[in-house]
Amino acid sequence: MRKVKFGFIGLGLMGREFASAAARWFHLEDMTVRPEIVAVCSAGGSSFDWYRENVPTVKHATTDYRELLALEEVEAVYCAVPHHLHEEIYTAVLDSGKHLLGEKPFGIDKEANGAILQHVDQHPEQLARCVSQFPFYPGAQQIARYLEEEAFGTILEVNAGFLHSSDLDPAKPVNWKRRVEYNGAYGSMGDLGMHVLHIPLRAGWQIRNVRAVLSNIITERPDGSGGRVACDTWDNATLLCGTRAPGQTTDFPMTLRFHRISPGEKNSWYIEILGTRTSVRFSTKNPKRLEVMEYSGGEQSWQLREVGYETPFPAITNKIFEFGFSDALLQMWAGYLYELDRGRPLSRFAGCVTPAETAAGHAVFTAALKSHAEQKVVEI
Ligand SMILES: NC(=O)c1ccc[n+]([C@@H]2O[C@H](COP(=O)([O-])OP(=O)(O)OC[C@H]3O[C@@H](n4cnc5c(N)ncnc54)[C@H](O)[C@@H]3O)[C@@H](O)[C@H]2O)c1
Image (cartoon, rainbow, N blue to C red; front, side, top):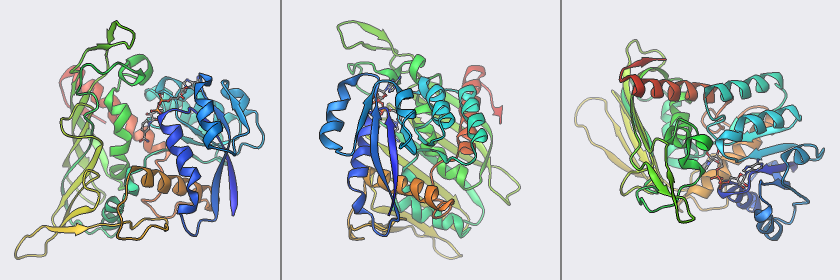
């Protein structure tokens, strides 16, 4: 089996999730490639102990990402750092000759994204991709199959979103994700948006214009040391987009919701597609439940389909068992490594977000900021 030696830059929430995915790579069957984490980098050294204890393959730990990038044995880098560092570190990764799996939004703003894409273009031999794991849920993969088969007929309406309630509690201390300086002016769009846009963009739908309503609901939070500090990012973003599907001559409405304050929701990624021949609904809130309505005249009736562990990359888990967040990450990383190894993704919807798709996402988020500021529809 081919082994790809990885360096990790950023060892927080997501770094640990990826380390855990590498540790259970044997969960996947028939893989011809696997990652090995050999080097880690974090701003503070405090996270190194966890990696030393849990990831025995790690040989190098540094607080300077340049030292990690100078290691010849590191072939690919997974980078999970705050958004204001994406441009500096992602471009350095690419210039060092390594493959890049970078976290969203792939640049704090449109300019940073543009700079990263310039470096991607300068290094066509390296694989640069952006993380987005939710399309790897079996329910989403079933929807992807309908898209590939063009089963929807005329698409009438799409509603997609990502809903959290983690910020409902005003007593929750601020962190970098709630500060424009580190998270960016996009607010919740930068945090959640790329996840939601992955399937629409991969489907080839063109988002032609947007009307956005952005809400900063909690404007101040505890700073964690007795004081209070501005919480200046958008908590919730709701977009109505005029969208065109390939082959259709008129736009359909697509609502996109990226909400951090959504009562009752913990981490719900959902998509609903209504078409003249087929309609579907899926949410990670109920990962085994796919709602489908196929219509060819006569009665209309929604079916509830049970979805099990039916994954793009075969795994040891029985197909009747449940699928979850960490399974999606494992599948997505398999998708990245499969593409690195074979030069193409396993299938159209079993690959990570491409740099071009991140640029399309930034175009939507930038237009949404303008739409909200000027209270008008903005063409993209
Ligand atoms: N795919 C997902 O579901 C998902 C979920 C959460 C976050 N994210 C993304 O992952 C990225 C990181 O988020 P997180 O939640 O892991 O953040 P985090 O705050 O938990 O971790 C950030 C890490 O970056 C490190 N860091 C900061 N400055 C650094 C520097 N100069 N050099 C090296 N390391 C540095 C910190 O030490 C920390 O280890 C963001 O882009 C975020 O949008 C993705």
